[in-house]
Image (tube, rainbow, N blue to C red; front, side):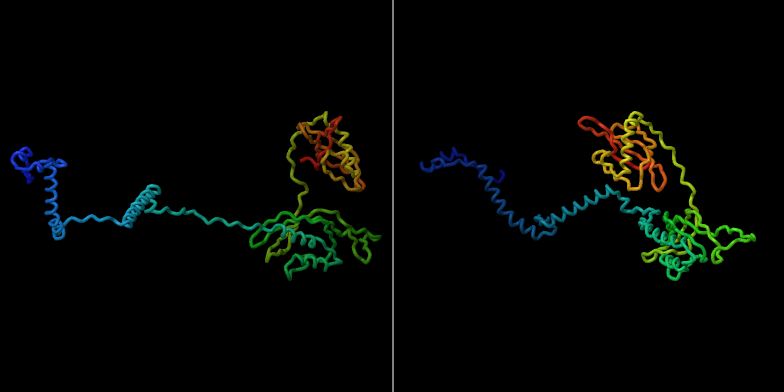
Length: 373
């Protein structure tokens, strides 16, 4: 029916066939006839179709492709391309596609970072201005060349050595104090210098017998020495090649007669009891402070050098201990010192510390400072 061989009935086989008793012996293994027929049919189809199918695939145009194994390089390239594609997608999601198409514009007001300007050498400018001020305001008509030589050290080569002086009179410079420096362009600056001077000006002529002014020895008019006073000097300087020089004539300016007004000091409460207990200790300390021996009246570990010889302790003018504080205490003292043929009063801030011994406790001086801050 299906092209399979006709099955054989085993019961008829034993009855009709004249087989010997040996042929009628059962086989070692019973075979299913349907399985044997199916196996034989498959073998026939393979034998008949394999050559025909191979020839048809080789000659027929448009035959389907034959699968082939891909090499490792092709697989790696494909995976790499996929990875790069996903990286681009992720980057676009993070930064935004618009930033790729239209790059952001730089701010219009962007400026270059400012470069640090080196500080003006104030100390060198003050040194030159101070040296010039001492020579400029000090003169003696009997020693003109000396002043010109001193000025030349602070002036450019070939500058006027008189700097406007008419060559007369006498004036002494007692002190020079350089002050503020105001820088300008091209290495120039203006230096303020305060100078303490004492002048010898013309004296009031005394009337002779005839009422006319009397002349001094040699026919010169006698001069009276004026007192010392401060005067300000604005000195223009410039820097060239690492050196400073005065660039022109200075200007005389005034010095304030008084300093600025001080703010009101906060009120300090006084510990009256401790002030009375420590007054004798403070008097002994200042007496030893002028006498040259402070170790015996100072707290252990304190280093308080004594005053030089020629200063005498005249007395403790006032003493008060501040009420604030629980450990070391601070107080204010006014002391009279005799020196230079007179008496001067000075102010101190004194630090007291409690020192304990086996049998008693006492206050001693641990530190002193000038004035009240």
